[in-house]
Image 1 (cartoon, rainbow, N blue to C red):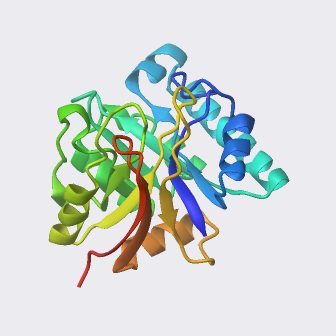
Image 2: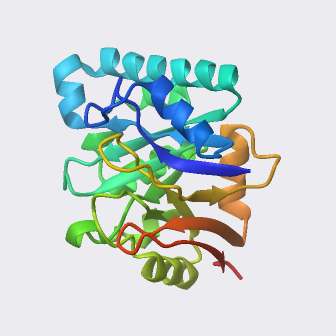
Length: 235
């Protein structure tokens, strides 16, 4: 199955210029069989709406995505993209998100990387460093990461696939790929190939945690070349 593991919708990610139905329709049109909704989760949102209200808004947006995905035939899973307050240029993607996880951990942006990682593992989630190296960003502490992401967003230049693939190999991490599409650029076509039995959040987490080989499709934002990478990152 072909998944986009980094997706936004306008109902929560205000930088996204399209509502959830348009985002899901486009994913379907471009041949994706599944996607993970990783809307932004920030301190700004918590301050504006209040922790409890924002968490419920966040969950409701996912529920709408899930229901619409079922209607059009695309599997929609629940994730999150945390903008950490200790450095707003650092974004961490969480896979395996559940409503209970968010309700019990509403202050994720205010935590350290180690605290976020520990909360994720307590609830059966995984922590991925989103788009490292973008515009001078740096990879976070590898001791508190489960994977790194090759990101195909069309606006930010080099996706750094080669460096990230090697980093995943060097540290035994999962290697993921997503488009980070915000409906303000062309639609990239990158993503991650998953086994056909990956249908739930738990399935995705178990696969990323235990697989030794990852198969991604890269849509290079600089060269516009589209190519596939099969990388064995764990011995």
